[in-house]
Image 1 (cartoon, rainbow, N blue to C red):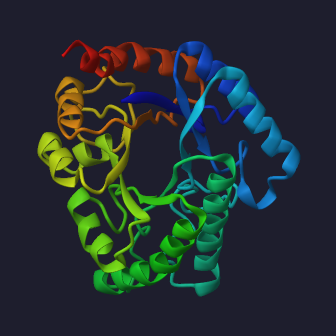
Image 2: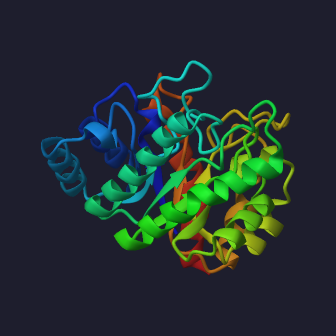
Length: 284
């Protein structure tokens, strides 16, 4: 396993400086935010793309993932991370999310990243049944999964509390109906903990479909608020032992977007807590 850090904690820094800082702290990779101010795909010109590649090469970093979940560039008054969603009742507004995802897949392929992560359907709208929302989400995902396959990358869905797919088990129904090898699961450990999931059990169960992990700590209340690993109550020793037990040897990305005031301190503390757990593999 290798540890990466998400640039969504560095929204007050240009990408090049974020990459410099993440590498200096000691991470091997980073998750690129396909959003302002780092890499909003709809307006990303060749010059900024070259700058992104140069910063990665200069720092010896690799892409763990491209985060296409957040859409701060749209600045929806309801919630800039969740909206517009894949299940918006308004077809035109829904199209904004779909087109953004296609562009993020294109960017992912162009930069040589392995996959993008995106939201699990968005909030169910008033008057919309859960089954209607699931059907719409599946309809939207099928051509996006085809586009991912055509581009040689993966499209990963990230269950999240409050959205259509809240648990890792709920991902299974959608994955089965889409039926594409280009679709995968982004297993967010904190989100699963918020939903009361048995982490070692679910990590083992979903291992055949999991292509990437997000980690952050959560308070004992299980309220969805990302904390630095070691400051909440998640047993990360147990979590990493379970991940290691599946044979997974890919990226684990630390996602601490609430810590924009001092992302360096958050990133450093997380690495201090998690690096011994990742390194434990070589000691077995």
